[in-house]
Length: 133
Image 1: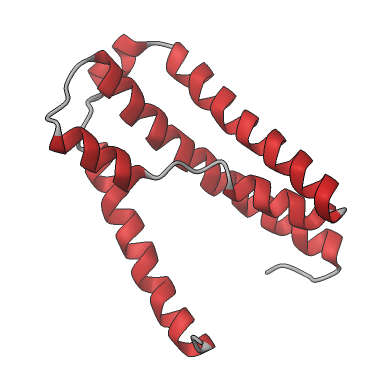
Image 2 (image 1 turned 90 degrees about the vertical axis):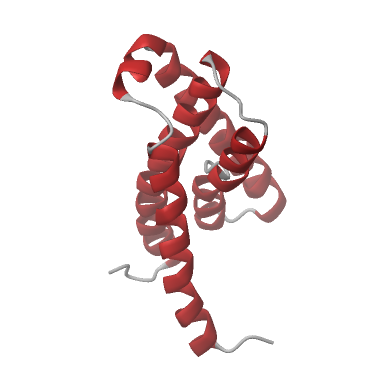
């Protein structure tokens, strides 16, 4: 239904939109608030990311038996939808420690997801037999 040329053009718009959303989330909290939240933010974010990765990897590898695909899908599953979180917190004018925690975890999750996806994409290329640039 959608040509490959159209998909390549849309890819650029998706990257710009994601960058703007993450930029907006970055403007919602300050470094002093992050420090006040402490190390629990890192533990919560890593636990959420690891949990999503393990569950999706296990389910995909059990269903398909394809470890390369399971690795790639598991890395993508680690992301949290920043746009939804940002819109809900703005619509309800939410402030406080829970909102700060959620926004920080979403930002952390997406950074972890971007790094993990790049590694997973390389692993996918190795396991699938395709060299990855």
